[in-house]
Image (cartoon, rainbow, N blue to C red; front, side, top):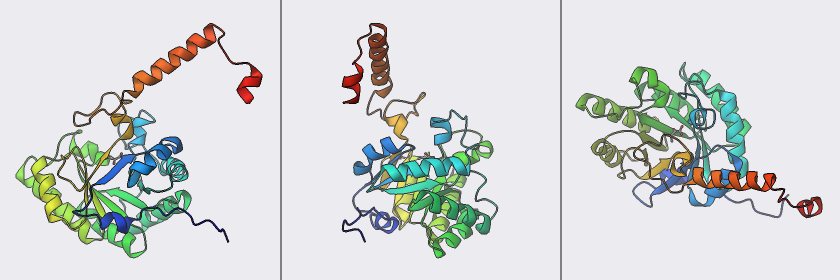
Length: 269
Ligand code: KIV
């Protein structure tokens, strides 16, 4: 047996217990190296299916596959030590019903070693969330703007402006909570709805484009680092990485062109 105690990761129940307490910090992560840097600042890292758009230049997240999520999930678990790693279930892998969903969920959990899964959907998804939680899989819900349903929503538009859609989103969140979700991500909803959901739910709300009223926040890492184009309006740019990387590439190209390069011995020292 190893004499070194493994570093304890944050767990889903610990995130749940943060309701109304210290704000929950999270970012998306798709690679081991970035996960390693973000790890000590984040309570959880989300391997979001936004990787389809951010990493693979897809137009929507609809084309993301289970195997892509597994590959990137493994990398993020390997790169991090402390944060809870949550992996998104991609479109088409959980909508048929609890059995199909559970089979695919077990595959992600076993292959990646992540600590929780995130599923997009409202009332219709509650039986699946309950099925997962009963069998030992922590679930983060995702309501409001649900990008996997972009073709029925009709675009990346703020949700909950009308009383009727706000009411549906509220019912969705309450039913996902009642089914056993440990937290609920709220994407792209108007501020008064986000505030009402945060007040009304017993589990933490994690906002993205949903105002500062939530119990925690998440951003797509590449957006806040200034690597994506275009960046959604609600995102504060915390760094100008595209410009920094471009300057590094330019210096490198200049070094190659002017033969200003270290010798072999120096390179392998
Ligand atoms: O896939 C993703 O990155 C998401 C965001 C809303 C955080 O779900």
